[in-house]
Image 1 (cartoon, rainbow over the protein chains, first blue to last red):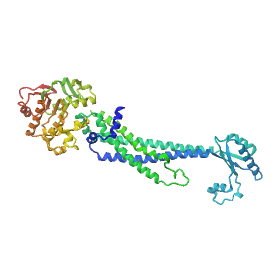
Image 2 (image 1 turned 60 degrees about the vertical axis):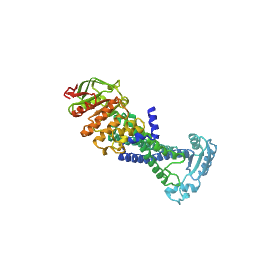
Image 3 (image 1 turned 90 degrees about the horizontal axis):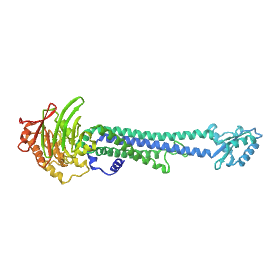
Image 4 (image 1 turned 120 degrees about the horizontal axis):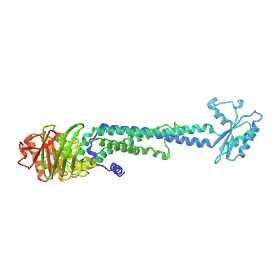
Length: 300
Length: 222
């Protein structure tokens, strides 16, 4: 553990000797920076997806849970009686904050996507809709249904549970997939860094031999590689994160804050992608250290 | 300081060295000779724990070389300076940096002593040159400077004059003799009998020969 702490501290302090003993390797350096930049860029979008899906699930769950609809379909002669009965029942039901009949304009707006803007509502057998706003913990839906069935047989209560649950579940799954993508990106970064570190260690086998010949401890040799790859990864991930954030900011914003138009971060959520370079550095640190330990153990 | 007791080394099923016994005492000077491929380099590698004896015992400064871990080997290497025929430099570093490498890997900085050391081996005007820019003789002298920068107890030189002319060989030999006079234990592996003969008037040395996988004390033929 103390060895790890020493090594972590050595990442921060410039290490003159270990920085210079390993020759600069342009190709693996560029590869490491490029891979970590590309992975950080993708991780920013995965995080944006995750955060947006989470936000959407919360919003759908809360907005839909706060309201319900009573639909009244009755013969024309009974409509007014049943509507009055429904409003009376709702007024007497605990957990109902308010109830109101949707206006003709509101009903027309609801039907517009299917029938166009000039629906002749007075000629269609359109049911009367009552919007119910819940209060506190909400109302007892089953009890309300039973009472409505006796006092207004044409009234049907829709508390949105039926279609709210799949929406919230879909958003939750998107959230899960987003995190899974972030983890996979991290694992892929680790694998790529390991490959690059292995290549660098193999290419520098002669350097390792010379360093050992002059009495270098393996932790010194490992540190030379770990520091180099960790700093390159932090640099690359920093660049990738920056580009990713600019791309997210540049995404179009819609007025309705929909899923696609609302993809991005909000508030303190903007700090989340800023952790990517640090996380990349941690992944690179352990990946390179494991590769170095394995290689040095294999070299007699 | 360094002792071998009936030590053998085999690579797979092939025995390369058998029944080696030797004690390197402080301040001694040994030549190790034998035909090419006899196992001189392999023998030296046993002495600086690059290889481990497959049987018998090798003790380096009181430690059993067969059970040393890598940290212990690194510690031993700081007490044994090794000069290779091919020098084994890091070509991207300057000669001064290469010579200072044993200090650098310990986190120490080279001081004015480094310049004195480079002057001692006659390379004070090549401080900033890269190894490929040096002649064979200069490289050998630089390798010798690197081997002694930590003031080790033992200096092992593997064919240090293999790639250089006679005049330069004499200079390298002279440096090794000087180190021995400072109390360092020196072992030089060479197939160059003329070098051994040239050293006789300068230093009291023992000559060992590896022949047929065994170590012998060389006779008066040298």
